[in-house]
Image 1 (cartoon, rainbow, N blue to C red):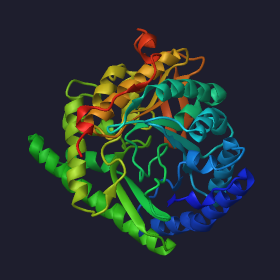
Image 2: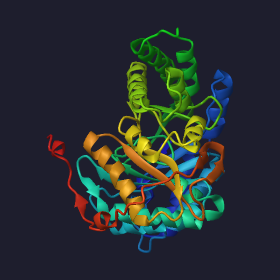
Image 3: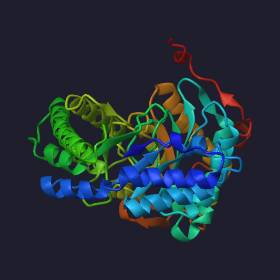
Image 4: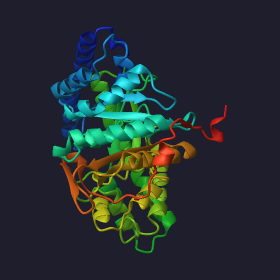
Length: 428
């Protein structure tokens, strides 16, 4: 459920918090109950119920004395009281620069995530129209490290709920990147679908001599069915909640559950494991087929839409990374053709902040040049190194710590400024 908080602004932070809490309670009070009812009626599992709100940097900077941690706690309490799993929107859009409110929110992220349970945060650092804000990239590298340090007793859980974007989507229903964009309605229901296990089973049912065209066609057919089902449930739920149906996100999102793995689809296609040569081509075909099949099932497609490759949330990806089949560089190559980017990747806790900034900058560049959404959700595992792992449990799963390039990025990322937008941004 996306909820606009634009009318919650006030010069007094206590009134802002009261407005936020009351509005979320008003719109979302029946969200979980009605979703559970539909789950039982249609025997279709609804894995998570979530809320996204207007980027909080916009809401909080109306205050004379902004207290973003206080607002974060209010959001977390509201999420807990209505029973949702996550609430997203502790966010700022800074691809061209930061306002005072943006800077205050960014500085508060580590403490806000350490003191909350359900809150998720996202920052848009780049776009194909604006270029890359390298000052913000370097700052976010510091924030990610601080978020991990403040939650090191939980393996850096704070960093696992923080994502950096290029070309962020304002109607994305997936965490940690969900927020309600300023062009969105007062309230709407957006739906994200899963189903890697269903796709894998369909591929395995094909004759062994089926060629890649037949395989792509089967994926399209399954994507159509998954999307149709997701939209049916979404529209039914929106009607019961008396709010508009927003979009369905066609992203093929894995979970840590056995068999619900995008990496498993690669194996069904004929690769020995994720990370083998050919993995990027297989992912490109999967991503395209999912979109082609899903787009025929809905007139309101949005969000990210494509295949996700989060390491910690996909049992097959975890196995591939732990076995050394899937390297950091191979993951980056795969992000050129998938839905998002470097997602839920654990790295050594002593990785320099400038190296983290370089990782973020590379991924922002991929998104900027290719006019697609890319993201970085990376977890520096404080006190741990390659060979260890981080364990979060639940939807966030666990991840082996992957090695990163030892060469320094410092001289480049510390130059600051903005990387200009590419020539194709001038397309008006």
